[in-house]
Image 1 (cartoon, helix red, strand yellow):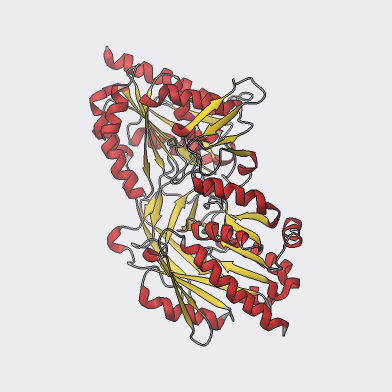
Image 2 (image 1 turned 90 degrees about the vertical axis):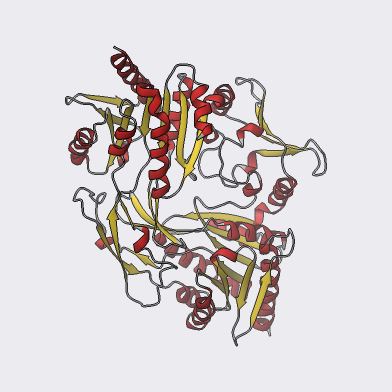
Length: 288
Length: 288
């Protein structure tokens, strides 16, 4: 956690945002061959990290190891496959000291991202998780580290956390055998709800959860229930198929703010701008 | 499949190897948020692809979209995160026509891989899958395309294919609700065994399956049962924790060949060498 303290110390504007990103895995065996995963590319967390850094905050990115990474995402769109190699030229002989490889053309967005990264890397720390257990323990520790910051700390909880898992004592030691010819029955238990624990450990922090649904009619009631139950500052609701174009901020007292994508600007830029305004308002209220 | 035909046509040595790589997903909902995944980085398939190309074969790589990619894997080890950016310098202004980014130092292995890629890309095709259903359909099509090649076609089936899935008619339409407070019961059905279908569609091909176990005592009996049941030419057995250092080739008539890693040479180089010898022997036998 010393890296986190470094990022916190390097902060200019007094605000530290913990961004969680990507899906958690649920191992089905102790010697893990099979696991349940949650769909999440990590794009929202990666993009938001860049905009938070640009706005002057420190960012602790707690992300799935395989999630899309901030900055690097501009180097190459799509899977990192051989189409990247068609754009690469090698310079220098294999034995030369100063061999380099050059990528062309590099996009404008990558040049801007590289510049942003080099300007802000002292305020940026990344920590990885894979399983839901690692996520639960890691986020509790981050909450404790952020507690002294009071309302200066914010949580942007964009990770897709599994609702169910197999407790270690019920887990098969080895790869589940498929010989029997019959199907497989799995019983999963509910994952302890983490949002309440974060609120307990960092009572003054600005805590923002996310709710993803595929059935739009469930989004508002579920977001509002989560908001009240865990005493959150906000829940950002998104529907699976429109999540790149529109989100709704659900706030206490039934306030709602709808944020839609305009033109070529990423939705995350607008999300972070409004998030920062609401976070600043909370800091001001707490200071009074 | 025209791409596959191109690779087949570009072949110099008369041998085409279909390499499958990475794990398959099993969606739990039609609007997929959750899925079961199989642990497989795809490293074995990616490395083998390079050695097959180097040995003169054509390769059709049928791999999970997120699996490790041949060639590209030498650009950067570990997750593609910001540590890559610390090695990148930008040249040219953001508005210049000829902007490039340079990566230094580039490793010797990346220079060699880039050279191999540029020499062999006419013999190399990559097709991606994600779900076990896509894998099953795709591999059946590849078997049909390869049938006219007779014993010249080989299958190196390194993908980690799920044994269980939820048939579409039993799948929930929307994200499974986690409100109830109780656990989740899942019933999975067995995936139709594909190996027999490949043998039916490409009766003369050299077909090699893989068996991964975490319990070593199960490896040999399960590999031998698979060999006989699906009329395979070979099953390559590996144990989860030692799979980078040792594999065992299980062949008909209880022949076994153990291949171990020596020094810095990747195990896949030796696997491909012995695989090619056995494949060549089959071509010779069929020609008589």
